[in-house]
Length: 66
Image (cartoon, rainbow, N blue to C red; front, side, top):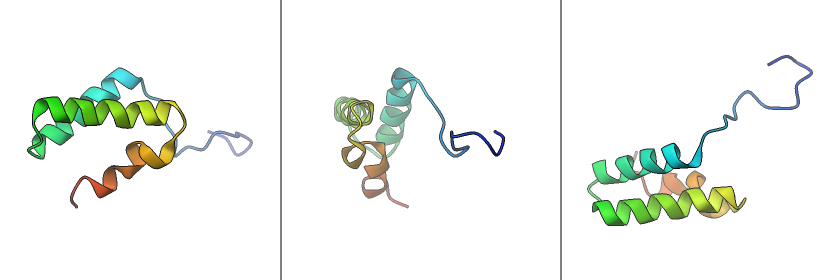
């Protein structure tokens, strides 16, 4: 994006469903049971969609080990 753009290059728009599925797969790879992984992913994405960033995907750093 050009210098005059008001949209930061570090932000990307993604569809909720593929993002939820991706997060679920990440949680499952961590050993979380599929049902719990699906619920957790859905709650985090829905929080982001509602604008509650403190309870959305940015909080995954506390869940996913480095």
